[in-house]
Length: 632
Image (cartoon, rainbow, N blue to C red; front, side, top):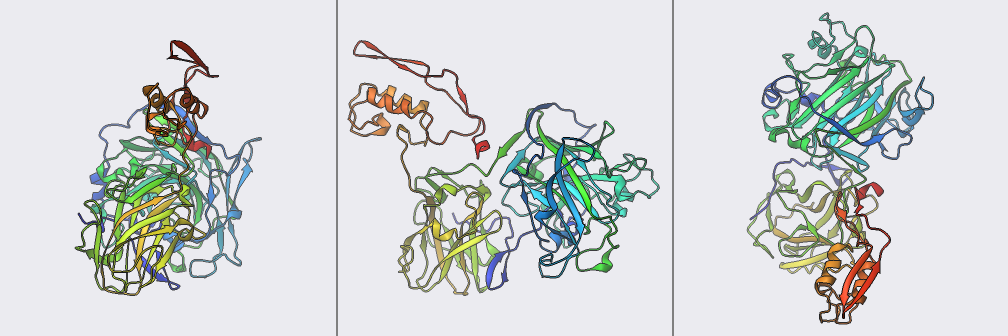
């Protein structure tokens, strides 16, 4: 079986003499979202009235006493974050502040300012006239399902302000494949507000202002949405030209700015529902909940949180970056302050989970693409990982596998370079491999200079070079299968976040050499220090290890044979081995979140030569480990 590109267009562009991944803009790219209405005909309806469900226990809350769960983003992104936005995001525009009129209460404060100066520039170095703030919980907090509630106050937005509290999928896939959920956003264009103003508080007079209307959205990828005008394939729920289901909320009598409103997302494995609560009345922001199906299964994965306040751009009636004639001047008052009082996650319909910190760390050995090498964990291409060829630079080759039934066998297509790699669907935490090695086998002619690299979920990438005709990292260049073992300390460079890898293996060639080659048996390994008392090799001393000892009690075994219960290395399973296990109880890395590990009871009775041995422990109750990531 040969693996090649499957599903994602990963584009490489020349920039400053180095190859850089071209990142799709998140959240918005609104000009690409305006798509044919048939997408919603495929994806939207839940028949009947608004679905009812059960709100359960509080799972997590952020009260914004500090910013420990957040990362402040900086810059203007790629063409104003894909939307022609006019602001430069700065850490200086984000802080924790007292809530006006609420003594003792603090909130996240995002301040938009009209200012310019050194460093306040777009990606091309052109000066910008506005700054603002944006925070993300990526690698800090992720949610999957639940009722998510936030209390938000926005400033006078008229005209050009665009505040939002929203979510992006944690997936390594590019936008819109990872999914987007906009819990709330304001500042929409007059055309959008006029289209829907016969519903949900609207007066049908086409005279609403940006301060009187709030909406929400969800975006996913579907093949049916791909058109010349929408090459990204983004399907947007709020794109509703016939006014069938988008129901933004209007309040003409009491504008929505400079006061708090509460927004909710009701999210389970089957549907999404977004609402706003104003004066104790809850208003749905779509005619019916959105049904999640195979076409929109991005919403069955974890998401992280984002809060920001943009200035200008395609969502608003203000002009776009670099084109003052594309819209109206920005006229909103500055400084403009947005407050987020809290974000809370509750169970919804019995569903909901919160993960704190980066993904669960892997250890000892991890397979990226291997059939026969024994590893503690592994990726499975087509299940939780994808093998991508970049820009069609390679096609299927004919070199058979080195081991097992699978190999990445390719030949070049004459485009002057080639690139390919293995991307995990979700970020991969290989932090514990910092002192280890990235190992791979390759069959490639000796005259080809190539690079091996890794890429993290932030877009950082690092490479090491394998020059032609030179033995490098143990790889003998004789045109046959050979193995290389790269120290992770060499390939990680100074920027790579090993806790958040997207591509755990990349091969790149930049000289245009025509070649047929194959890669196989890719895995990471780390120095392994055995845990005393870990008899089954799972990295944790617990009940299974105790059972190994008791199951072989009073047996003669080969000295030091751990799997037979002899950690004392005396050739006999007895009291010394029991003491080693009990003395190291709970050492190592716990099992997965939610597992309950029983401690030995306070009295363990073992019949030994007709006598009873009593071993005392201090606790009897099970130890509920909960989510070990919460201690990260």
